Amino acid sequence: MATAMLAAGIRNRSARRSAAEVPADLPDFVRHPSPNHEDRRGVERPNLIVLHYTEMATCDEALARLCDPDAEVSAHYLISEAGEIWQLVDDDRRAWHAGAGQWGGVTDVNSHSLGIELSNTGITPFAATQMNVLEALLARLMVQWQIAPERVIAHSDMAPSRKSDPGRRFDWRRLALGGLSVWPDKATSTRGRFIDHAAAFGYPANEDPDDVLAAFRLRFRPWHDGPADGVDTALAADLAHRFPVDRAGHTT
Ligand SMILES: [Zn+2]
Image 1 (cartoon, rainbow, N blue to C red):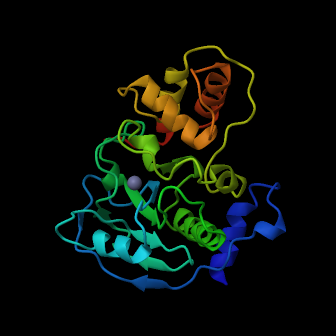
Image 2: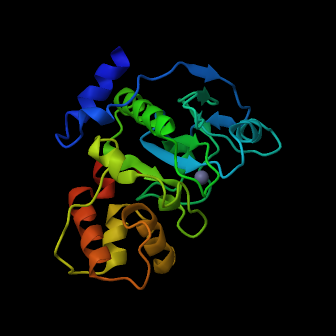
Image 3: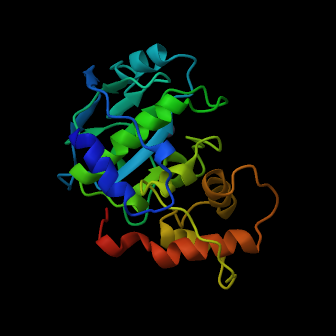
């Protein structure tokens, strides 16, 4: 399968991934067009991928809402717990999933991104099949649109004060081990301020530092609580050093 080959190509960046975790082949997309999209503004192709959970009781409910013209929300893809993929908006269109927020110099995240919704109540673990299919979809989209692993982010990353999805139950480390996102190495330098390092990695510099810390921990230190400490600073410094957000020049 071409898809499996693409996925294997990305995985080869990491020798740590075991054969037992090989993503499932990508299922055929079920076309279910949403009316909630428009032209991208200022960019022709996506350069970010934003992951969400639906926070709804069922996937059918989420599908209906993401296609309801009155709701004025959408995403490019919706993945059910059973691993079905609905394509709601074409990749070249601007879907309405991100809202207000920022990642590095990108302030119109919808124009720059693809949005993937995972059917999930917000308080339940993510299904294994759903994760396998997400990995296969990410692998395909990242090759197709030449999107780097550090540009696969959480909704909470770009809108720390408003959003908390896909939440602390989402396994970002697993994605990173497959080359589909990034993960900080154990770092020892605690020089500088957490918020400055976080901003250099991409977090909005103009938001409340406590909200940025909370979003950072949702992704990189799930279940950790308490005031900011040297580990937060060191992890953020490592990410900022290895993945400075605007090196590819994506802005506005
Ligand atoms: Zn979201």
